[in-house]
Image (cartoon, rainbow, N blue to C red):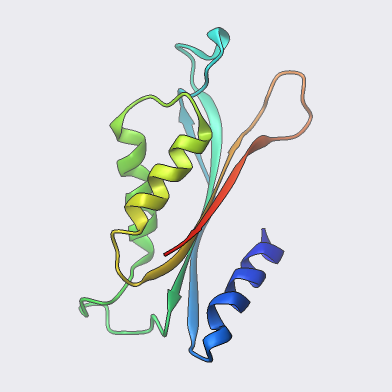
Length: 133
């Protein structure tokens, strides 16, 4: 994820403006998700990594209307997960990005969603979706 974040930060800052990257990493939730019958009615550990890129400096005063707080990332995740049960991790990631983009200061966003503790796998599986405005 670090290489990806570095690449996106380079892309955003190519116009010689300052860019800021804010992130929420390793946020684990127990949620019901999946299309398989054995996933229905059971919660799974899912990890979320959310990164947003802000053109310019985000070191404004917290009471400024242009200020982007770290809590906004957590609140966006909470809002999406409260809506409904999802079949696909990709749907969750896309809905988080769409909600994040309601903030006009965000130039790009990347959301990685990983299922943890998958039977028969020693690693995680998931998706990473990135979108530029």
